[in-house]
Length: 270
Length: 270
Image (tube, rainbow over all chains, first blue to last red; front, side, top):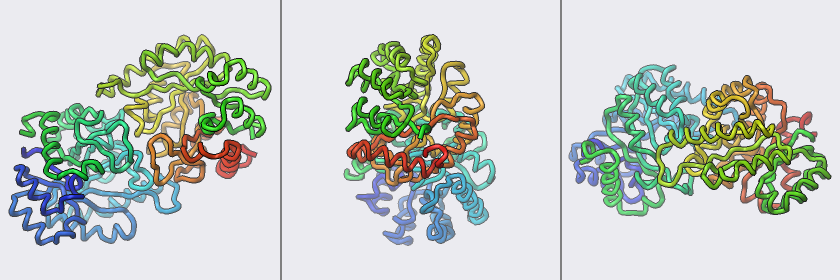
């Protein structure tokens, strides 16, 4: 089952990083996506040791941001830690408008400048930055980048060292999705593909994502777009959900793997 | 204060259509936006009589849809009623995916075909259809049109008789907003401009819109885009909010008028 990756956030409420890595290893997974604050809870040495003992690689590293003075003050240290963990890519979390700020174009330009300023360090460390456009309902307080079109535009302007991650929950609704995925593919900048689902009703803007198959997203259709665009990497399960956080982490992961096998084909998840 | 219009939905929980029209007349407003189901509650004859007695015109008429067999079965009758009320434009409410349907492009094509099929009747009645792109968080269960780009594309393909309404709450986050407003303006298809606000936090996907000034939308900035694009029509207040629905309708309207005066300039709201 080498082609499914779990993001630790999916089970973080009941499994610390060491338990999470163990659960991944028990399921013969080969890579994980991790969080800096979860590393701190168990200690970097123990986290690195567990990764090595389980033979797990790091796919995504969360994260640089928010783009406040405090968040950016930690950026270099986060990047260096991501490099020590051998991360494939490091997520950017722009955060939203500053307090009392209303000018979204200005905030967007500022975020792009921040990304540009990070790139020399990123390239020096052999890393890649990942822009993951978030859902438009998160603009203002959590992000200023809410479409793949915008992320592609930024990548076009900034060049090497920055790519995109396509998250189904955030982007499924966009009528430009297929064209923008193809555009990202042509530029060779698709760094990841996150799966989850959109529930009807969705009761909370942040913590009511669905398990794949429980909602209305055409996940197989979006995966096909990503594959046609040349992305050969893993499917990453990332579910922020009060409901799933309450359940046993092993059970959540087993259900997610079954769903991935059913939706994305046995060749990738059996 | 001729250039502010209230959508009845803003106060519908505590004011029926006759009370609403009276409240508008007391505030020297010259137009209103109304709902077919609210007309039915008070009776068409009384509604028409009150409009006439107060000298109020109808700006927007809600609505055609959802685009189900049942919703479309009522479409011609709704259009004819909108014409009897002298509405400037009639809102389309596409509804979302059919039960068990996952293919959003197919649902979008189907919605566009429905709009095309409505146009001969619309033109015959001297009306205009208004596509109001809703927020992407409403895709799937309430709409399949969630960006001004998509609405403009549909209008480009369908030609005369269909235009767009720009609602701040639905569209403020879009990095293509200014370009798409300009595009709509060049085509002379901006039929309305709805104001409200985006609250932080937003606690519900449908019924937690903010009063203008209570949130983070740059309303003056978006109005400037709409004016630069040539739209000379009114600012329409449309707030779906459990909090504001609980309050006295007269108070809600007075507060909204004060906010419009403060945000959109005294020339238009004094």
